[in-house]
Image (cartoon, rainbow, N blue to C red; front, side, top):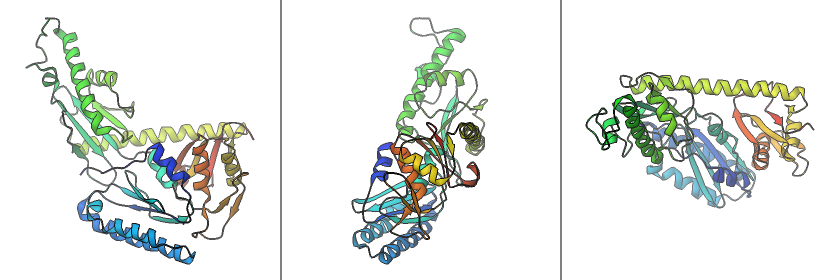
Length: 371
């Protein structure tokens, strides 16, 4: 079952971060690519949309346009047939935008004068989904891997079936027209032709996804493909050995281990760097300090709790935090605004689970310089 993904581009993310209006509605909910679960997702969305409209009514904000947008999306049967693992919906005075995401997110509704973008950053932080390229001399398959759904083989137009067909010969051992293609070196030339053909075919399928590509292959095919690959998401760890006998489920299980390995290594490196920078006066975890640093462009890397909602306001010039007792349509998420300011100043934002942050905090920051 293929995922239908709409991962935001940098321009789309910036547009969401910059949006300001009397009412901006942000809705997140877990979904499923399985058709039989589409109705459940649609009902969940209807309930969350109703919560948003109640918040607008309590704040005395007119909701006619937003109500129409949310109801139109709810009634769009074709939209609900093609889903992924989570859905993010942003509705405002200039229209509605949705993103189908490969990460499992929790249900949330936020109404404010800006969109709640922080959970969307989880997709950029850690892709729990990806692709496996099972590449052998005699076969090639592209497998899509995602949480909670069976792995599936994707159809790739113009994908060659094997080395010989890619080279236009009956056998990999055939001589070339000049008589130079022979022996083991000649076979490697054929394999490079094959690898380039595979790479060309994958470009149209992988373009825009930004998800990791994990190579399942034996030598020398592994090294040959890596030498011609043009997809920036190809990761260094692979699945060794000939993949021809492996089922999609077996390849997916191995791929999830690779994804976990990549994530754990990145987290360990970040924790170590934060501790080093904290000792140098360039690591802060007090939310007020993080907010001020983000406002003046001092944050190099922000570690934000994806599930934390801290209602309040940030001063536009100083970054001073004013906390609010409850979440309503007047205030906004403080951590979300810190993330916005970090990104607009060219910083990196990582949306993490609470247990992955350094200490008991909603956000921590590695700074460009000591304050």
